[in-house]
Image 1 (cartoon, rainbow, N blue to C red):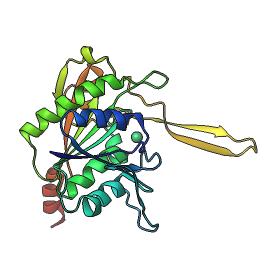
Image 2 (image 1 turned 30 degrees about the vertical axis):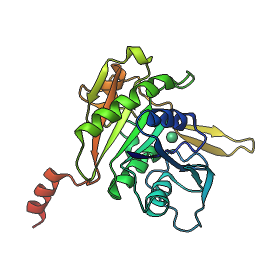
Image 3 (image 1 turned 60 degrees about the horizontal axis):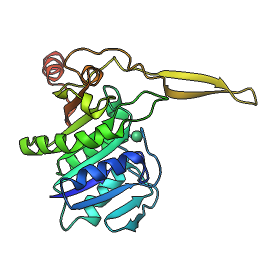
Length: 251
Ligand code: MN
C-alpha cells in the first residue's frame, strides 16, 4: 500500500511525525508532502496567483510553499502522478476538528482534495485543552487501528473520513464511535484588544467552548466520552430535503 501524508500544521509539526510513525506500521511506501509553514484554518484554498515550489527535503519528503490543498494537488498530479497512493492521511492535527471546524480546517481540506482526485482519505486530529500537553501517544496508538478497520471496510467515492482522537491516555480510550458532525455546540470567542497606539484589534477563534457535553451520537459527544470519533463526510453539500421542498415551492 502506498500512503501519502499531508497536514495543515506544517512539515515540521509534531503531529506529522506521529502520523508518519503510525503510517510506517502499515506500509513502507510512505510519502510526505506538507506545507512549509503552518496553514491551520486555511480551509480548502488553492494558491492561484503565486508560483508553487515542491521542495525535496529527503527521500519521499517534500515541503510546499502553499496550502494543504496545494500539497495534495501537487502530490497527486505531479509527484505521484505515475503511481498514485492508495490512501491519503492528513494530520495529526494539533487540536480537534469537530462540528463547525470542518469547513475551516486545512487538515480536513487535504482529505477533501484527495477525495476529489479519487483517492480515499482520512483526516486525523488530536483533541487537547489549551495550556495542557498534547497526548500524542494516544494518536500514535489509535491511528493504525482506525486506518486498518476503515480500509478493510472501505467507503464510497466522494466520501472522506474525519477522525478525532480524544484527550485521554491511550489505555483510557473506550473504543471507536461512528458519529455525525455536531453543529452549534463548539463555538468560539472573538477577543478584542487595544494596541500600543490605542487602536483596536482582534483575535478570532479563541477560547473554544468544548466543555459542552454535546448531543449523543455526535463527534463532540464521542470525544468528550473518551471515544475516537469517526465521521463520514460527503463532498456533496446539497441538503436533499430542502432541495425537494424548494423545487416544489419555487416551481
Ligand atoms: Mn492545524
